[in-house]
Structures are given as C-alpha cells and as structure tokens.
Image (cartoon, rainbow, N blue to C red; front, side):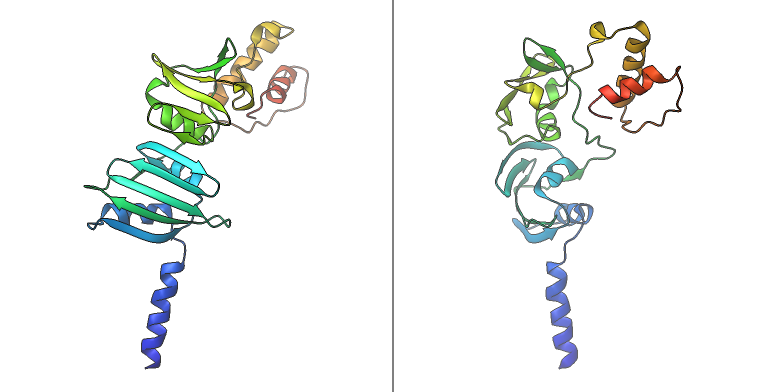
Length: 219
C-alpha cells in the first residue's frame, strides 16, 4: 500500500515540475488528441514566443499570452517565477519547432521621417515584433509599446515613437574624424553578427574603437 501511495505522489508531483521547451515541443508533436496540457514549462510566455518558430499571431496582456502557430493554438499564463502554465488546442498535425541560434538583441533599424525601417524584414514582421518585445501581432500589424509595425514592400516599418523601441544606426556624418567613422562601422557590423562584448587594450590607436563601443547601445 505504501508503495502504491508513493508512486501516485511521485506521478502527481512530476506533472507539476516545470519541463523544458524542447521536451514540451517533442510531446506536442507526438500528441494525437485535440487538447494538450495544462503543463508547467520552464520559461515565461515571452520566452516561449522567442523560442518557437512559425508564430503567426500573438497577443500578450498582463501575465497571459495567446498565440497561433500552424496547427496549434496555445495559451500561457506566467506564474511570476520564470515558469508558465501551457494549454494548447491542436487542429490537425502539430508543427511546433524550436529556433536555433536566435539573436535575442533587438535588430538594427534605419530612421526615415521618424519611422524605423528594417530593411529586408517584410516577410518577418511577426518574428520582428516578438524580437522587439511587442504586445500583439494580428497577422498583418504589430503593436509594440504604442508603436505600429507593418510591412512596406520588402521592408518592415515601425511608426510612432520608434526611438524608444529600437536604437538607431550610428550617424557617421556626425562623427568627428574618418577614424571614428571607420571604428563605428566596424563595431556596428560586429554587433549585427551577434557580438555584444569587446575587450580592447589601452592605447591611443585603439581609442576610436573604445569610443565606438561606448556609443553603441547594444554593446
């Protein structure tokens, strides 16, 4: 009798233990019934969005997130301790996939007439809205801290008070010397490739690089 009770308790507590997004992905993809969960995942609602591929729409309000993937309608409620309770409704075959090597830093933008232009991101508006910490995306328009993100041709454009959402590219024309502009362009390209930490030896020749790092908000 004691063995049965201990096994039952272990089974109940194991369902309450948070599990990784990878394990949750594998379970959902192997699920065949209409509903999945509730299950405790070891990530917040925003981390779930950033970690999954194929998000088509999402909405975040207070501690709750609803999102739509291909074949999967998911809702998550944050617990406030880095975990979230996940429920999913499956429609057809589930196709939940993880991102690999995702850069969590907000992407760079070019400011034109007060709006932030993300070149070549027109097909990735939803993914861009997630990367910028957006509040919602309805399939066509993203809402990010009071700003609006839409597709415009091959680009994505953020209108509103965009400077409070994403840092602008450095303005090389305002830099005092050609060396400063060269250093800023080098640091900018490294940041674009995912570098966010620099170690620079002291000296006059490395001063432009040190100043360029100090100017860049992503370093």
